[in-house]
Length: 533
Image (cartoon, rainbow, N blue to C red; front, top):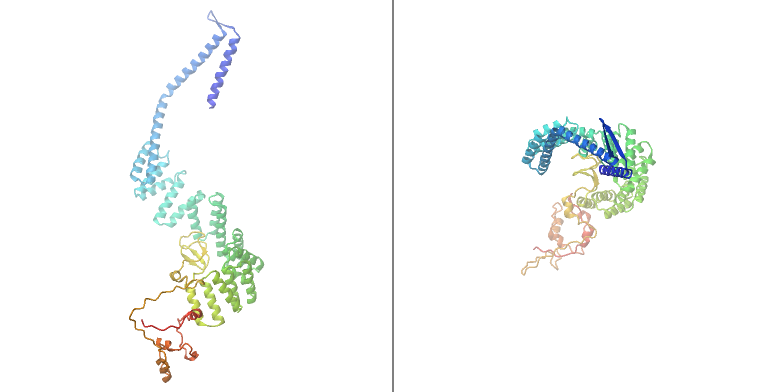
């Protein structure tokens, strides 16, 4: 565009010049070799312009003739390069489509037309063709050759990393990933593999530097980087809690600042503050975490913040937590545990039952069984509550890749992934899926219709009307005190409804695995005659 404008400007200037000369007529006299030439000024100007144009055209022709060999060779070279790039493009497409034969054919064609040192993509196409043909050894050699070229080094490390992963050589894979991460921290595959290696070896400082590099290169978002830093700082504090308490406290407080709702960070920070008698600051950290999301570990640390406190003081602290997060199962369970320690059984029972109504879980039934055993010692009711606990949904725990742990860990023991553990309920047991509605408060009890009575049915009444004789089993027990007759269905049906209750000495002892009789189920029973069929 600029050249066109310059051309127009030159033409316009020439036009103005000739117009100016036309308005001012004159003559030009030239004396040369004894001759005198006289022409008009316009003719002289036109002659000068024509001579200049002729000289320029002649110079262009001479230059074209002089450069013609180079121009011809460049034409064929460009044509050859275009054919090579066309073959290279077709080969890359074939490699992406999985056509190994076509990829190998186009690789050879491109290598003939283009020098491999001038176009690094030819080496990549050769490696891809070798992988498609199953020649992994040849592909590794190509990737190792790429390490000598600074432009292709990252590509070679990526190929060697994938080959090591395919062979299951984790050490070699992490070695290549570490080299790539040192050169380019923005590579996600290299950074993630290196991060897993550092966390697996417990190098928390190195992992923190890598996360900071990822954050500076904007590979991960700021919130994700802060979350990872909080997890790594918590893991560092957990590792240094006994060897270097001051460094552990610094790391835990920074982790809590990044994620105030993270229970493990809040717990470690508060525990270290309690050890240094800074109860107020530690309690404030736990209260903030509790308001965000209640957690049993937070409740246990908060209620036992002062080791010398009385049980009533612990109960009051648990009630304070309950005021911060009302209508929550963990709040009620915290108060119930503290009340059980204080021997306040009515409060403990009330809060445990409230927790069951809000979130029916295994731990609530177990706590209620402990309360029942401590208050009444009724083993029948205790076993009944334990049987309900077995069928109830499991309590939340730290779960990662199918592994259930009572304590939090920074990485998964299966995959080595950072921040894999989540606080949630584990997978339900099969018995819970079958009996999950058995103890529901408002669940309707299913009824099974009795089969149609046959026309000829023999009904044997074990307690005929008008019979005043005592059952045979009871009579036998009266005659012989040493022989204990089994309690049969005949004896059970023979007892009149308005009969006197048996003395405790006459009751038969329950088996150790007898869960007892639920009083509610006993009231729903109605006396009916026993039918043999």
